[in-house]
Structures are given as C-alpha cells and as structure tokens.
Amino acid sequence: MKVRKVIITVAGRGTRFLPLTRSQPKEMLPLINKPLIQYAVEEAIGSGIEQIILITALGKHAIEDYFDRSLELEHVLEQKGKTKLLQEMRELSSLVNICYIRQKEQLGLGHAILTAREIIGDEPFAVILPDDIIDSPTPVLRQMIAIYEHYRTNVIAVEPVNHQDTVKYGIIEPEEISPRLYRVLSLVEKPRPSQAPSNLGVVGRYILMPEIFDALTATPPGKIGEIQLTDALQLLLGQQTINAYEFEGKRYDTGNPLGWLKANVAFGLKEPGIREELKKYLAQLE
Ligand code: UTP
Image (cartoon, rainbow, N blue to C red; front, side, top):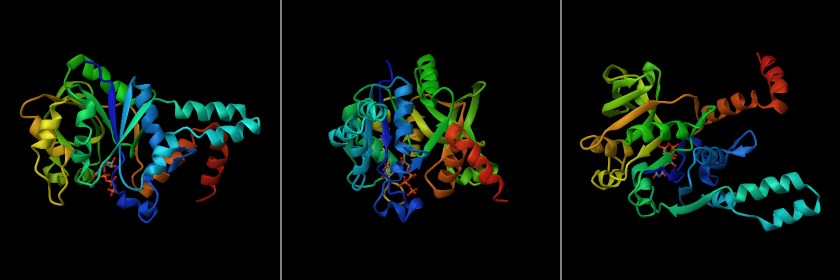
C-alpha cells in the first residue's frame, strides 16, 4: 500500500526556545524568509504525500492561519499590482490538503501520533518532526518511501552522531543490510557513550506501519507521564521488522537557538541574494 499520509507534530511546548515560546510557536521561526514548518510541508509534498495531518495544541493557531487563505491580503496585493507575490500567496494556501488535530495535553510524541489514529486508519504513514530540517537534493521522506516500497516494512531515519552525543538520541543496534541500510536489532533511548550499541542516532523522519498504534496504546507512560515513540518502536520490534536508513542530506536541529542560528547561516550562504554579503560579514567578525 502506498504511503499517502504524513503526521507532522507541532504540539510540543518548545521549552528550549523559552521565553520566545511563551506566546510564539517555534515552528513559525524563519529560516531565511519561510517559517520552519513550511520546510516540513514542502518536504511532504515533494515526497508525493497526499494528506498532511498537523498535530497542534493551544497557542499554535499562527500555524493554521499561515496555511489558510487570506482574501484581504490578496486584495491588497492585487490593488498594489504585486502579481508575482499574489500568485505565490495563492499557491501557498492551496499547497496540499492539511487537517489539524489538537493534542489537548502534552503527553509526548507517542501520544501526539496516537491522536491521529482514526484519520490514518489501516495504512502505512509517515511522520515528520519539523525541528529536524534536512537539506538534501532528494527530499528525505522520498528517499525513505523508496526504501519502504522495496521492503514494505517500518523505516526510521538515522545518522551517525558524535560519540559523546549518544545521550541526546535514540541509538540503534544495527545489522547492515546494504550500504546506508540496517535492520534494527534493538533501540536504546539516550544511552551513555559507553553503553551505546552504535553511533547511529534516530532523527525526525519515520515510515510506520499501522500496527504502531497498538504498540503505542500498550506503551506505559514514562517518567513524566509521556508516551514515548521509542518505547512503542521497541515493542513493535517484537513482531515487525524495523529498518533504519542513513539518509543523504545535511540535518539541522532547529529546535534550539544555536541549531536554528546555524541553519540560518548555512541556508543564507546558499541564497543568491544574501550569500556574498553574509560571507563578507562573517569574515569580518573574527
Ligand atoms: P521535543 O522532545 O523536541 O519537545 O518534541 P518540544 O516540546 O518540541 O521541545 P523542547 O524539548 O521542550 O524544547 C519532539 C516532537 O514531538 C512533538 C514536538 O512538537 C516535536 O515535533 N511533541 C512533543 C508533540 O507533538 N506533543 C508532545 O506532547 C510532545
């Protein structure tokens, strides 16, 4: 069965970005001139996804407004004769079919995914965590869907992480299938470097079989009452194969201020109208 739907989770509190996130969703922060969330939506569309399910929460309405149509803005642009911009704004609001689910309590990523169970139904689906922006010629989700179509099983995205950083990631115990592709033997959440079974850390892209919902339902909440996706994946491993794919592309963790800043510098250095000035500016900082 084809992967037609994606869940994009934006219901988290974004504590690493406080105080900004007291009243602003971090997903609306700009990467050059587009909000972070738009990169996730464009990746989904570029990967052939037909329906986007955004899991939102209180205080995130700016995201819904952003993808909505603004007749008033279109009218102003029309009057000012800004036809190119007008066209762009119309295209933005008709990007793809987006529906919204509110996660009423922040009970973790696993719980957020579970709220979409009925809309997903009995088919494989994708998940994008929009903090992880991945710059790649082929959208990472598209790369993963190709793997899914070959093996017809769960696929999670991994990348090699620094030895001392294993404490920040879910780390897989891998068995190599082919270059860049592994079968997951086990998953360890945030191990100390000495206990990590590899240096392959899980990042925010998944293709999941619908059986994950039963696994999520059977997953007991962790320390702070959150249902963790990693725990459910561990359960799923008992009955299904999970493959891990080392994607091609450069990932930026824009969920914290330093990572966000790095992404903006890197994207700025690729942007024709910004590149030269930015290079000069950076060079004279030292
Ligand atoms: P994070 O663990 O990065 O949490 O969530 P966060 O709230 O976004 O940010 P910090 O750590 O407090 O700074 C990983 C993903 O899971 C979603 C987040 O929106 C993010 O996409 N999430 C997390 C939910 O949708 N609901 C939750 O209850 C928790």
